[in-house]
Image (cartoon, rainbow, N blue to C red):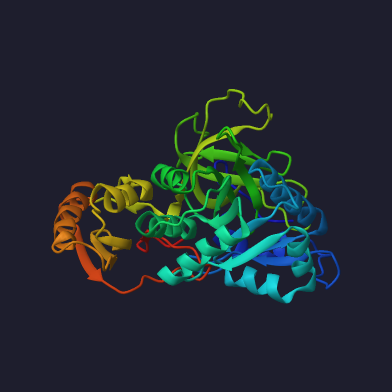
Length: 383
């Protein structure tokens, strides 16, 4: 079954879509009983990809999610708030009796992060304080938006831990969440098609769940990357015989940590960092990759004296970019114009002198269909 892979290659999302029937076990049947189900990716940047999870893998996925909660200090049954951005997940949790029962047993309070106005942020903070909440599971950009609001308006509750999901936890974001809420920040890494793959422990070690999945990090030629070197993530799932994903190119970039033991004593291999989705990497005029982490720091931190709420830089062609910005209504006069001049200057320094950057001020930059907010987006290369 399946289809051949040449050395150094993995299954891409396009391969999975094109060879769905060949990858699916002939006996596969989706039923209402606890068995195999179809799972669709969020399709944040294009066409969603469908995979099959059989009963054994569903169990493994549930176990990995429960283990992530334990790593973050709130095992099943500990009260926590979930600030979630996927409407599909939210609707399923609200409509399914089994999902509602699980949330009740798990003492979960669900909040919709798909849209977060100032009033929404204030209401979320008030509920955290009223309930004496100590733990939060959240889309990273949603809880970061709440943290930015809190820095300006105050009212931060003292949290113990934050599980940051569904996005890249940059050093700036990690530090802001830790300072504003006084909490441990746990970076959790996973996807719909692969379930949870890694999570940070209380010591900060980003542990890969090797009983559940095997990860490789390879360069453009398919050769393994040494520790500290960023490369493409390939995932091989164990125990999903109905729909095998072998060396699946999930679309993320990451780097291994040095092979040393974590102080927590867990035996799993450690990631040094997760850079983000490959589709978020921009290309300079000389062909070099430009990390979205760098862009977020340059625009959101270095040249943002409180003038911008959010931004999104999109590459349409080799030298054509659009920069959408949400101005902060409370910014000092002239701050946005000053920020624009410095941002455009430094973007051209890294993207190339010929880069044409269209600056557009908007009231709101929409999230993707999956609820994630993408600060950088490369549309010049099909995903």
